[in-house]
Image 1 (spheres, rainbow, N blue to C red):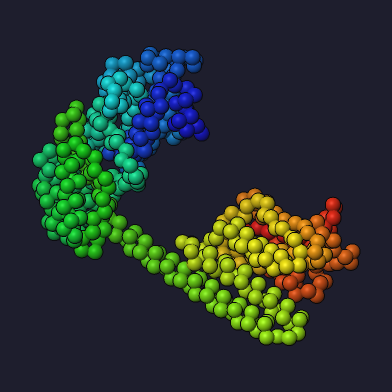
Image 2: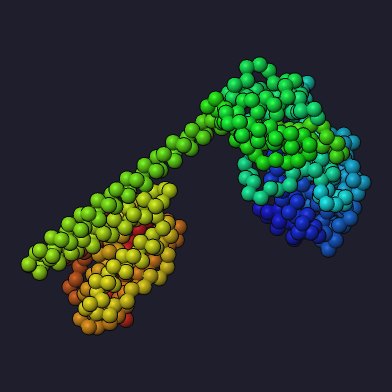
Amino acid sequence: MSTLRDLVEARTDLSRATSEHLHRLAAEWQLLADLSFADLLLWAPVRDDQPGGASDGTGAFICLAQVRPTTGPTAYDDDQVGQVIDGPAAEHLRVAFTEGRIYREGDPVWHGETPARHEAVPVRRRDRQKVVAVVARDTNLSDTRSPSHLELNYLKTADYLVQMLTDGGFPPPLLPGEPTTAPRVGDGLVRLGADGLVRYASPNALSAYRRMGVTGILSGEELASLTRKLVNDPGQGEDAARRITTALAGGTPRRKELEARGAVVLMRALPLRPDGRGAGALVLVRDVTEVRRLDRELVTKEATIREIHHRVKNNLQTVAALLRLQARRVGVPQARAALEESVRRVASIALVHETLSLSSDESVAFDAIVDRVASMATEVAAAESDVRLRRDGSFGVLPSEVATPLVMVLNELVQNAVEHAYLPGQGGEVVIGVLREGDRLRVTVSDTGRGLPESFRVDATHRLGLQIVRTLATGELRGQIELRNRDGGGTEAVLEFTIG
């Protein structure tokens, strides 16, 4: 499926600024579709060098985008984006584009077994009077009935916005840092007159205001003053009232969350200015009390989890310090070496918990951990040989249940390569390679040293480090591990497993 930008560049001669305007329209027009109970299709003239093309609007048109209503049935079973129409089928689009007026004439059009009413609305930018595209408002007529009071108010508000579409007043300008999420029509709608009094409030809007403390009806109330009184914080109340009056004056204020009596309501105000005349404002509200409560609980849980990882890291570092002290007091070289190996193993696990204590979730950027493990191994080997370690490839982000056993496996393999691949005083390189394809990882630890004995088998070794590697690779990681001699000399350990 081609994107709006792809279609504009490939099939039309619309400018970059016009393309950006149409993108903003496509980001906002779900509101208009829901208020209209109709599909909206964005059409533009096909470029002159394309079949049937005429950039002046007398030829073929291509559908750049489509949105279906969430408040009513769609007029199309199939997606229309990318479709090109010409001849009589595009007559309503030509009239809107060339004459610059809303086209509402004509009999219903049948799409299969679905009758639909076609309207065509010329689209202009705020800074230009020239028509740049056409929005078709196509309504499914198969369920014709007398509209309810709510539906009549929706349609009246939609007509205001359609008129604003023709003179560039809709969509509203994009504010820096403004989120794209907003209350929808079904969440709660309040229509204000030019005097700021409530002309209509949907049931959901009334419910949201009741959560904030309203006991009567909203109709006839001055919404700015009422909202100012409801909000807990006087400063926030004044700010919320100012946003409503700004919309009444033709401005487009930012979205605002209101807190009153334990309720949290997201509010968005839009001006209604058909033909440039102030006709009031549209206020959309959504009760987000439960959403914010869950957000606070989640933040608390995340903070608790990070604190647990921090304490585990501290405890592991304490254990490592105790083992290090014990190793210094042991006179038997083999016992001292065993304790020092245990220190490195505990330290590698502590690295994972340290990273998790700084993360907002249970995932870690694993490359930094591997690089620190490699650095520790290099420091240990520096006194005996000139061994360099290098990482080739990226592990990406891994879940904690994978990161902990994997760092232990890599710690053992790297330490084994550093200590045994090269003779004392001999230099060389150990490479940690990783190939990640989706959730599948292939990790190698290779060197160019003296290689493995011919009779070596990883499943028959008595060395504790390699036994840990095999147990973690096949058990915790549910993968396969193989140690083998490389063709060009040296050793290669290959670990393959799937995340999850």
